[in-house]
Image 1 (cartoon, helix red, strand yellow):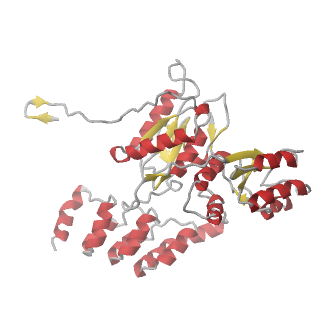
Image 2: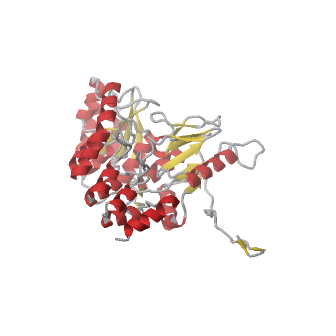
Image 3: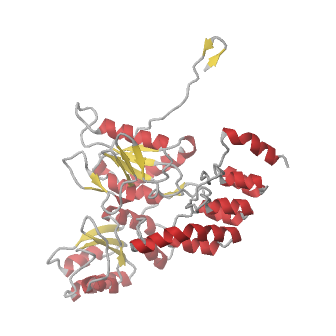
Length: 422
């Protein structure tokens, strides 16, 4: 900066590089290494706006999936990236991947564990490695990329998770190692399945055919699965197919459900295994609660018709604003469970958070923030929820919104100061 006629340089820490010793090939990584990364993020969480992790490609999808579950109430981007060709080679993809990850982590608030590769940003627990001989090594079969970095960086904000801005970020490093992957194949024997399911195994991801099918003319196999689930082994049914979801539409799929298997919906095997390891380590959950959590999909996918989606998107913003006005949190929760964003605006550009701030409904404001409602939305008059809370003199709401990051732009500061001089 300039001070009088002298040009003084103020040093600013832009980034910090942390290197692990010894450096590991990703094939040699274990759950302990995932925990080390998670602890380092937690230790430095308040110091930085985002984190970039350089990682080998072979098990990057496993690490990205694991960290997505371990990092609870994440409010900043954590982006894994790497390269197919080492960065010191003349022709490599490492430089582009690293620069792209750094740019996105530094410029956009995407509060997720992500994987950036070959100009695309993916949700970390939705990716799988699909090609060992191409720069385009990763794919997210059942969810479109969160961002595409071409001439411009285009973010798909409708898909990005919204941060819970009121909860404290924590990292759960306990992972259960007694989990495994079992892939069905024609002619697999009951003895093989029985041996795989023996203690100390506590969780299995079963990779089945098509939409979650297994032979229903093999009572010996089904009996082994049933015995395992009855003694408390959690088995998640995932498809071997790259795209698609597990259903019980066919008798061969229903047979596994009847044997006690949990549907893995459209999770990748990497995500299902990481989630199983994470959930089974939670000592505060009962076995039934663990099964329920494991069966929930990690996707933000809706299975409604286009007509229902159009009706929902037209009505729900207005209904949500009405619920916020009268303080009906149960109605807001029902609208959220239908798949609607609680940041959607009505015909005046007003979100439920605008309405709750106007009415001074502190509990509703708290709930909306916990569900990721944005404090930066502006209605057609240019007002934010904070502006509304100040105008109607709801001090507790103002304090909460300010605490969660809401602020005035330069042109509003004077008006806000006058309003706050009550």
